[in-house]
Length: 139
Image (tube, rainbow, N blue to C red; front, side, top):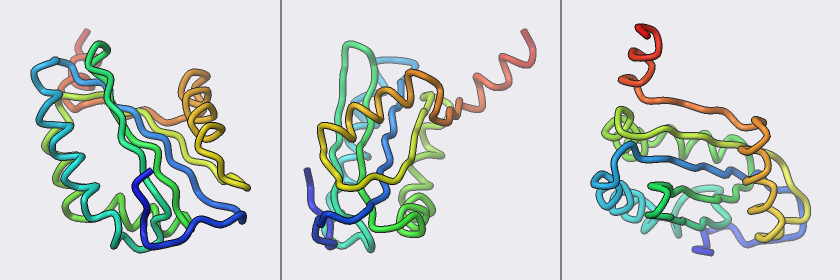
């Protein structure tokens, strides 16, 4: 886990599990590059405890497991101009699913399993690209 400025403790934390699926494999390298570049500033991200990035090229998927001191800290990150620019740049090329919950104590293995389970059973939210939304309305 790439650590943030907030030390990991035993108290409650906010966990965010995000998964994107690229429509085309050729888009994956740029998406991973931009996500990795964003994570390089993690050490200074207010309220960040840690982040793990992952990629599965065979499924055209990737994402993150991030741990936060509070929901406000997570919201602050999601609205950062750099994060918003990345999301806008790829919104027509990916489908994004995410789940957020409180956890205490935090354990990476348990958080990973919970994140996967929440997405699998529909407890997360989904956002589809603009092009796909338009297509689904017209078909």
